[in-house]
Each structure stands twice: as structure tokens, then as C-alpha cells.
Length: 341
Image 1 (cartoon, rainbow, N blue to C red):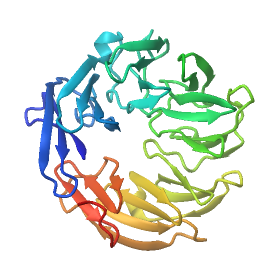
Image 2: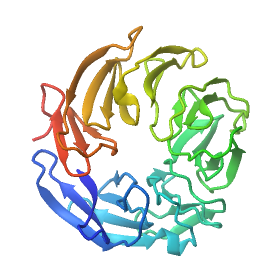
Image 3: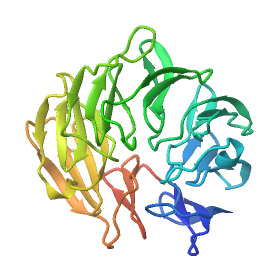
Image 4: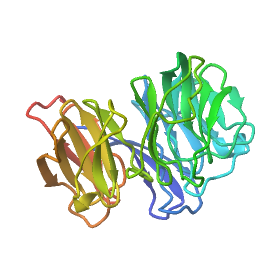
């Protein structure tokens, strides 16, 4: 298990590899990363494990390829310096992505909005011009018969060709000023997006891979500023003041709302057939029936006992859920079987 951290002096990023079964520290990687960001200075991007390597991206633009077994650094780049990029207010947040045989990163430089790197060496294969980076992670998807990278820049949603980085389409929202934090979600060859100023929208695509500007459906009351929605059992689940359940098959028709106070701020969602597992900022796990006609809690329990809030998305491996707050990490076994040695 790879965990992002900071040192006590708040001048270095610290990445820790923990034994998933016991929580013991196996190795650490540390480098100098000075600066000040809103909501703290720790790395925001999720580590990317690919083959025998893990790719680590800090909030100030440091990118490292590390051997997963040993923690030995294979190569490193400085995305801001190398690509003449501006540091966003909340740092570089979008997670690295393997797509088209490349490591895709989002520096947000004027000539390198996106960059494709050789995963083995870190050498640049292509860049594409654009605006400053937003905060959502990019996804790779087949939309309108075109394999593309989909994500945000500072002011718009867009699609980029996986092989060349050429921008295929751009969509600016009706109301400007979204922070563009929640990650887009693919729903049956369509694209679901949600932002704080423009609510939740479902878009279709033309045969050439470009987006149809007019949304097929919209639901304004789910206007999440940071929580990414999930789709399961033909339904959309998202958090904004409440837990919202919408029909993914019938124009985002609202099916129910939770009206549970634990959803007033933020929550992370993990979906599986028949269930949605919610981790709240107060450190509570709530298991919800995803097929019920109303808000139906199957089980709930607090797991974080300290006073710090839970903003990191939990990680699920087999039946084990790993939850972290600002000061602790907890492993919870969600099932009877234990898949780890």
C-alpha cells in the first residue's frame, strides 16, 4: 500500500510503502517540496501502480517513477519547471494515467497542457498546448467511436486524442467559474459530469468522437464541488448536501435523497452490484442498498476515532478497506474471507 505524506517541518513530500496486511513500513521516498497551498501541502494525486513500478506525483509538480518492491527511484521529473507550467491554487491534483502505452500527466503549461511520457524513462513523447490545469483526474474512454482522454482545463471540459494529444472538442459550461474537481464518469458511451455551478449533466457524442453540446439530461440539485459520482445498477449516486440517487437510464430522474446530515460536506463513494459504500468526512462507513426504492442503510459504523476529517478517498483491495485521516490509517475487513497472506 502506497501512502502520500509530509514531514513534520512541512518542507518535504514523503511517500510510504506499507505492508497491506500488517501496516509495517517497507520503504520511504522523500524529496524537498517547499511551498504553501490551501488545505495543506501534501500530495493530492493518487499513486499509480503499473507493472513493477509506482508513479508518484506531488502537489508541487514533482513526478517520480519508483520500483514498487524496493522504493528505488528509477527517474524523476519536475512538471512545472520542465513544461513551464503555473502552479494552481490547490496544486497539481490530477492523477497520472497509463493510456496508449504512455504515462499521461497534466502539467497545465501553455505548450504542455497534457504531456505523454515514456513510462520506463520519463522522456517526453508528445505535448499538447492548452490552458492552466484544473483539479479532476483524466480518464481514457471510447466515446463516439473515438478513443480519447477526457478531462478539464481551468475553464472547460474536453477530449484529446490518445495517440497524439490533439484536442478533439471543447465544452464551456453555461455558468462559468466551476473549480472542475469531480472526475467525469462514463455511462454507456455517454459522459456524466457534475460541478458546483452547473449541476449534473449527461452528454452524448457524435460519430466523429465530438461531444453533443446540449446535454441529454441534467439534474441541478446534485452540484458537487469535489465528490465524484458513481454509477451502478442503472443508477447514479452522488453527494451534495444529501446522498442523491438518480436514474442513469431515464434522463437523470431523481429517485430519492438521503437527508442524512453526514453528507452535508463531502463523502467518497465506492460502488459494487447491489451496494454503495460511503466514507464520510467524520470517518463513518455507511453501506447503502443501491437497488432500493428509498434510502436504505444496510449497515454503518464509525472507523476513525480521532478528531481530524477524512478527505482522502479510501482504497479497497479484496475485502480490505484502507481509510486514512490526517493522523491515522485504518484497515477494515469488510468480509469473512481474508485474501491477503
